[in-house]
Length: 481
Image (cartoon, rainbow, N blue to C red; front, side, top):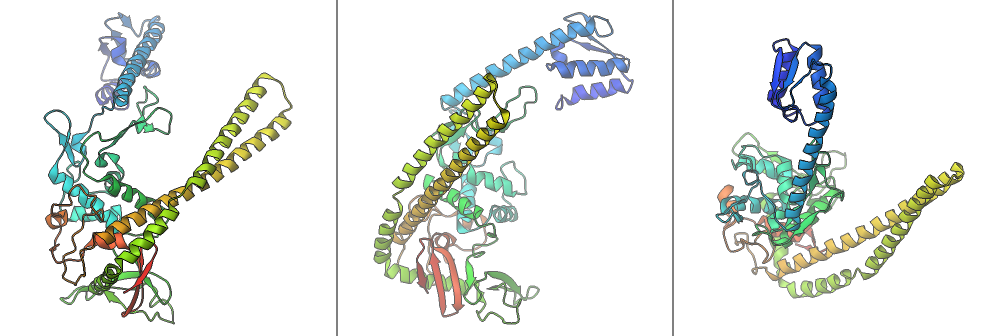
C-alpha cells in the first residue's frame, strides 16, 4: 500500500469523515494482501465508512462480510503470488538464455539500436572512458564526480551534479566491458516487493560478449585491482594524481599540496612535506612545483627507456616466478573439502539431536567444537585466497608495466607529446582517436604531461633533495631520476 498514493488519499479522506461509502469493482482491486485488506476495512468501519464490492456483492457492514472478505482476500493474495512466480520464472528463463533489458535513460554510454540491441553512444562513451582514465590516473570517485560536475557534463540521469556513488557504479559495472552479470538482486517477498542483494540465494547468470564493449576487459580488470588496493589503503585520498604518491625522504611522511599567493597574480600550487612545520626539527626536503615533479618523472622515464631491455627481461623472470599458484590452489582445494566435511558433521549433529534425546550439555560442547573447527578452516581458506589474489594482482601489474615499457615512444623532453590510451598499452577501444580530455577539460594534450603514463609507471616517489628523487615503480623496482 505504501506506493498507492491515490488509495491512501482516499482512506485518509474517509477516516477524516469526508466519505461515507466506497464502491469497489472487486476484492482483488481493493488489495491483494489479506492483512492490508482486513486492517484497512476495520479502520474504515470504526470511522463509519462502508465498502461495497460489486462483483462479490459484499457490504462490509454486513455481519457475514468480514468472513467472506477474509476468504476472498486470501484467494486474491494467492493469485498475486501465482502471478509473481510466473513473472519471476519468465525473467529467469530470459536470463538463462542470455537476454536482459537495459534502463537506457539512466545508463551512460549505450542506447537502443534499430534492431533493439545495445549500441554505443559515442559522445557518452567518451565520458565513460574519461572516468576510467581519471580513476586509473589516481583520482578517487569523489574527485572524478567533482571534475565532471565542474566541466558541466550531465550525469546519466541528466542532472548537473555528479555523485561519488554514480561514478563508483560506472567503474564497477561489467556491462562496460561487453559482459552482463544478471540477477544481482532479487525480490524474496512478492508482498513487500523489496529487492535485496543476491548472495547466492537464487542463481546468477554471466553473459560474455553480450554487446559491444566501451572499456577493454584488461582495463576493467585494472580498475578492479585498484579498488582492491585502495580498500587496503584507507589513507588514499585521490584528490589529484599526485596525492599519496610523493613521500618525504627526511621523515617518511607524505607531501601535500599548498597554494601560494592564492589571491594575486602570482598564485601557484606547490607540494611539500605535510610535517615540515609540525616539529621543531623541520624536514630538510624542499618543496616542489608540479612542473618540477613532471620534469623529474621525464628524467626517470628516459633512464627507463635507455635500459628497457634489462627491465623487460628481469620483470618477465619475476612474473614467471610469481605466477605459479599451483601449491596454493592445491591447499585451497583441500581446505574446501575440509569445509564440506565440517559442515556435514554440524548438520548431522543437529539432525541427530532433533531425532534422538541426548545430553544437551554434551551436545552443545560437540556443536561448539565442530563450529570452531569450521571457522578455523574458513579463516585458513580466506588467507590462502588472499595470497592467491595478491599474487595475481602483482602479476597483472608487472604485465601492464612491461607493456608500458615496450610502448615507450623514445627519449622524452618536457614538451614531448606522450599519448597513451588509458590502459597503458594496446588495450583501449579508442586508442586511435583523440582523448576526451581535450573535449571536456581545459588544456592542450599535445604538450601536456600525460596522466595515464604517470599512473602506469609510478607507485610513489621519494624526495631527498631536488637532485635526488627516487621513483618506486608499480612493478616494485626503484629508479633514481
